Image 1 (cartoon, rainbow, N blue to C red):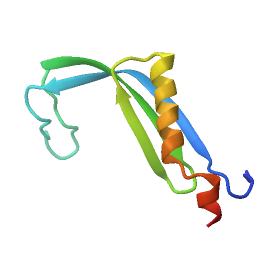
Image 2: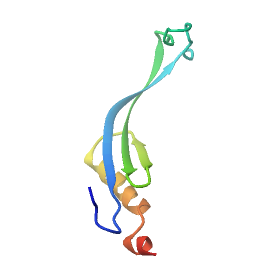
Image 3: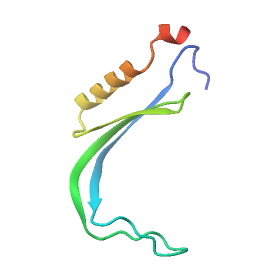
Image 4: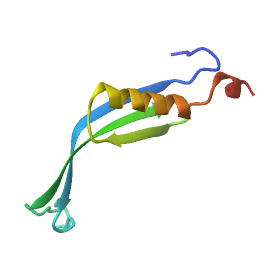
Length: 93
């Protein structure tokens, strides 16, 4: 695709209900050819929501985790992205 000159192309996505788990011990390797073993017990610390924006040209990511997943949080994230992206006058310099 050919975006117009002096534009910023973003890819924005969201992932809700990410579980914040803490295992009782770190993963342990079993041996060559076997995957790592995890303990069966963990402490659950609730869920979080991840909002992320990828600047396609630069490959940089702006991400935020928020406690809730409502339109207000998404609008706050979009405002943060707008504040972080350079303005058109900065791109022309």
